[in-house]
Structure formats: C-alpha cells, structure tokens
Length: 338
Image (tube, rainbow, N blue to C red; front, side):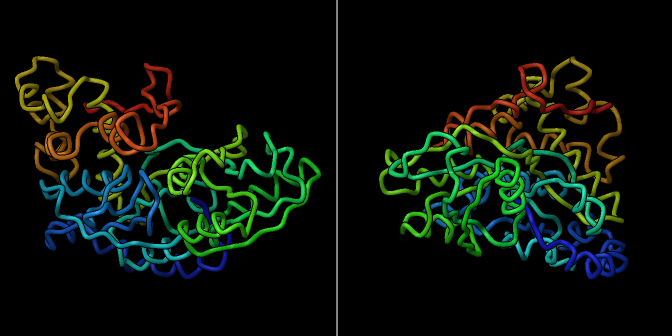
C-alpha cells in the first residue's frame, strides 16, 4: 500500500526521530521481552486474523521472525493494527518497534519521513478488479468508470497518472480501510477496485460469487513491499534487514523448519555460518549465535512462509513470479552470511 499526503507528516516525523531512534530499539525489545509490530487492519495473506483470532500472513511472519531472532520466541509479539493513514505516525512516535504492513518502498518515504526500508518481502504492482457485468477486458476500457479506493494511499496518484497518460477520466469513492473498500465494491458503489495485485486476489475470495468478478491483466506500477524502521537506529535496522536475508538464504541452502536440526550437523560452510556454528554473525548483530536457527525453526524459510500465506498452500494460490529466488527465475536475493 502507498501514502499520498506525505508532506503533512514529514516535518513532524523528522522532529520525533531525534528522541525516539536514540532509545535503542534492540535493547528496548530485549528488556520488554516482547516485540511491538505494526500490521494492517486486515489484508488476506499479509496480516489478518483467522477464525480463532490468531494473526497470520507473510507480514506477520516477518514480525514472528524478528521476535525469534531477538527473543528466541515467535509468540513474543504484540500486534498493532494500523490503517494506511496511521502507520507512519505510529512508527515515528515509537508506538511500534517496526512496521510490517504491505508498505511500498518509495523515494519520498525513504528520504523525508525519517524512516528506513529494511528490504522487500514481496514484489507487487497495482492492478484492477472489476465486475464482469461492466463488460471490460482491459484497463484501457475503463474510461468514465467509478473506482473504490482506500484513503491515505498513493493508489490515486498511480491511477491519475495512468488515466492522464491514456487520456481517460474516472470518478472515485474513498474508504479508510481495505475491508470498507471491498464492501463498497460489493455493494455496487463502484465499478472497479484498484490496489496492489496481491490484495486483489484476497478481495476475490471475499466476494459472494467470485465467478462474477475478474482481475484485469494490466499492472500499472512497481510496489516493492517490505518492513520499515526508524532512521538513526542502525543496530535495529540491521536486525530487521538480516532477518529477511536469513530466511532467503535458508531457502536457497535447502534449510527449512523441518530439517533445521539435522542441518546443524552440515559440513557446508554457508549453512554452518547461517546456523551459528561458525562465524560471528549473531554477535555482530547483538544477538545470540542461534538467531537464524531460531527464525527457521519457529517460522521457516522464505519459501515456506510464501507458500502457506499467499502461495500454493494458501487460499490465494499466487504464483511466486518475481518473488522466486534469483536462481529460480525471480529477483529475491539474499546477501551472504559471512
């Protein structure tokens, strides 16, 4: 997801950083014994509660993985649901330790809000979900259509650019949350929902009759989504960044939640370094030597998380595509642990 009125919070955000970032988030989390993680108010496959109230999703797994790295326990997480408009202020103010909420890495966010993006856990792009009854097969046929859009995002900016470039017009109905947006669409208040393509797959599942809707083929933007931390706290930035990298390397090396204990006996130097049997990766991060072992044991590698939350083992059935490893046709690439 994306934010449009960034300028209104950038100055305030910068002022907060001098006091909040210097607190040392890693030490704070260790002392508290719990990680406070900002998530969405409900995005299927990324961060949402199931029928039992348990938080699940690929972004939730990032929270669980960081808690495993720092505290050795994936359950030591307090989840704070945030709307698109609330998320950056909550991070800047120190209300949350980091943000893991389908958030797009952009130049403005990276340079004017006092924030750092700690990697990309999902490469996405903005798409369109339509009722088949309006009879269109391409976004280029949407001239004059009415859109349901979530407020506080740059979805409208991308949409405006696309429609101007193609000499088309549109009307919009805005909502505060993703769930309200789809409810507006289902109630017939608009012809089209536009959002990150990954979210559209989840929206299809929430429609009473999925056969009556379809996702159009066009992708009109680049949306690299990932966790966000405050600037000025490099130790914490490193922990969150290398947590994602550890999960990527684990998948590439064939280490998963089911075989990680056996892999402790591996003679492969890369696996030995990843699992803490060689080198000082843990100490250099201010963590236990088994930081990555704990991530993999408790949460799994990146491929496991993708498959169960958004991929082949999930209801969404999203293809890996760009989110496959670099050596399997994708662009997910973990820097070496050495």
